[in-house]
Amino acid sequence: MFFELREYRTLPGKRQDWVDYMEQIIIPFQVSKGMVILGSFVGQEEDDLYIWIRRFEDDAEKERLYEAVYESDTWKNEIGPKIPGMMDRTKIVVRRIEASSRSVIQ
Image (tube, rainbow, N blue to C red; front, side, top):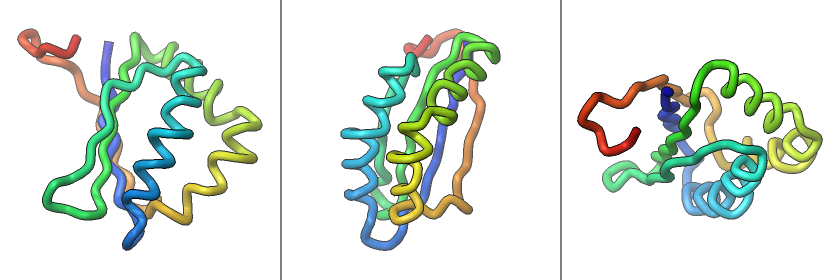
């Protein structure tokens, strides 16, 4: 099992729009495809920071879920096209992380 910690930077003045879009559209859509989303966070000291965490059992599951989400017509035609107006895609940071033995997230 591993986790993806995804760090995004929103465009000026767009963070709340992005959070709303994530929580009302993107996260429910991805969950409907089988993604496990553990959390959604905003920076307290950085007004453009958004972080979320997803969990995968293994690389095969990640590949299958990525395909189910990102290759879908809904993502390509409805969800994806709205993202550039809210987020700076050049600043995306994705970290693959593993829980330590004493972590409460397993």
